[in-house]
Structures are given as structure tokens and as C-alpha cells.
Image (cartoon, rainbow, N blue to C red; front, side, top):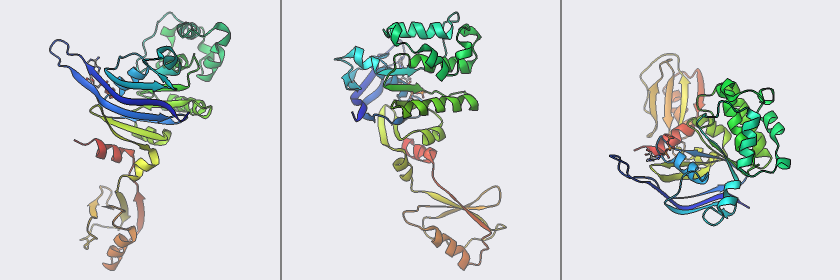
Length: 307
Ligand SMILES: Nc1ncnc2c1ncn2[C@@H]1O[C@H](COP(=O)(O)OP(=O)(O)OP(=O)(O)O)[C@@H](O)[C@H]1O
């Protein structure tokens, strides 16, 4: 199967409530998610990411459109489509008197996993909670709770794992542990879908990225192709001291950095770096050191979601 998820014409309108008018959170989105990928769903606040994830998870009813999960149409085979997906939610609420082991057992029960097929010990091991298996949830740290939520999302061995802002407010150690787990699961064939506000993280982790804005799909591309869309690079040059600059090729924009270096932004599709360096050399500007800066996902994101 090539697509883990196929979404067609997905619309969600939240009904008006009191003084709040109705809100169209998704305006007819088409999106496919390749199976086996780590897929990033990005967008500014209020873009509709959570709405989409909650629809996939079966927690929010769509207004219109078709959602096929692992080959099962949500409307035709709701049970199978739900069984194919596991969701690690954002919120850390949990029953304070449940131990991690009990939470996993209850969750497995909810998904109808027979006792013989449960993998509770392996799961506890996977997320590093073996030592806390019998501790009350109220005694778990925030990081441990998050790891328990990941384990809960996996009890029924879903083919697709959805992580909603998994690393928001999480320290570096836990973040690394989460990503190591996610990579391991992905290597075993699991499709991963995640939302994150950390664009650096998405750039590093995701094979493919979709950006939504105001309920519409803005772009869906391989991460590398997406990054190459931004036609802007910067040469950062140490020329010793601030001087009057010679004319540069049209389209190049010079700027002095606070550290005294000269930063020249340019579109690589029209200007080559050596043309810039030649212009400086011809004017006898000393070039002590040069560094090149590539656009990152942040640049592309800002460009695509502006306005
Ligand atoms: N239950 C609801 N009732 C009414 N409006 C809602 C509801 N949930 C979300 N919305 C609205 O729908 C829009 C999309 O919200 P959503 O939470 O899906 O965005 P998001 O991209 O996940 O944002 P964030 O990054 O802030 O979590 C927003 O304008 C939001 O106010």
C-alpha cells in the first residue's frame, strides 16, 4: 500500500455557539500521506492541524469529505480505520490512581486487544517506564506522563502513529528519547504523523511536510524539495571594518550584522556567489573570511504562510 492515509475534500465547520459564530476550520483539504514516512503537519496557530488530527483519530466528526485510513474508509469501516491509528494527545490528563501498567491494560481493553496479544512489558521497556510500572500516575513527572501517553498510543500495535505536539515544553533529554523511539518505530515500518511548532525539528525528522493555513492546504512536498523552494541564500563576509560598498549585482541585498560582518542576501537562481565576491574583490575590498547560509524551513514557512 502506498498511502497510509488519503483525505479528500475534508471540511469541518464548528457550529456557532452563543456569541461565537460558526467557524470553518477545514475548507476542503485533499492530502495523502505516504506509508512508511515520517510526515510533518505544520501550520500557524489556528490553522486547523488539531481539527484534522482529531478527525483522523475519530474524536471529531467531519462535516464533509472522505477519510481513508490504511485502506479503510472511516464512514464504511469505522472500527478498522480506528484500529489502524494510535494517537498521542497533547494534554497530560490522566487518572491519578492508575499505575502505568494499569493504564496500559485499560487502554488495551478499550481497543479489544486480547490478553495473550498484549505487550505491556515491552511497551514499558520501550518508553523507559519499567521501574515506574507500579507507581501511581500522580507521582509521575511530566516527562514520564508523556512517555506513558506514547505507550498508550501503541497498545493495539497501530500501523500509523500520530503525535500532536509531542515535544512542546519538553527538555532535551526527553525530546531525544522520544525521537529515538519514533525513529525506531518508523524503521520497523510504522507511519508517523506529527505536528510541531519547532520547525528545526520538523526539518530534521520529517521526510515529507504539509503546511496548512486558514483551513487550506498550502503545500505538500518532500522536505528537501520544500527547502529548495526558497530562492534566497546569504553570504556572510568578514571584511575587517565597515566601508563604503561597491555596486553589487542587481537583486543582491547587503546588510551589516551587529558583529561587524557583511551579510549579502541573494537569489541563487539569478546570482552566483562568485559574482558577489568578484564585485568586492574588483573594488579591493579585503575578504578575510566567508560563510554561506542556506534557507531553512522557517524561511519557507514564513514565506508560504504570510498574509
Ligand atoms: N471545538 C471548537 N469549537 C469551535 N471552534 C473551534 C473548535 N476547535 C477549534 N476551533 C477553531 O477552529 C480553528 C482551527 O483550530 P485548530 O485547533 O484545529 O488549529 P491548530 O492548527 O491545531 O492550532 P494550534 O497550533 O493553536 O493548536 C481555530 O479558529 C479554532 O478557534
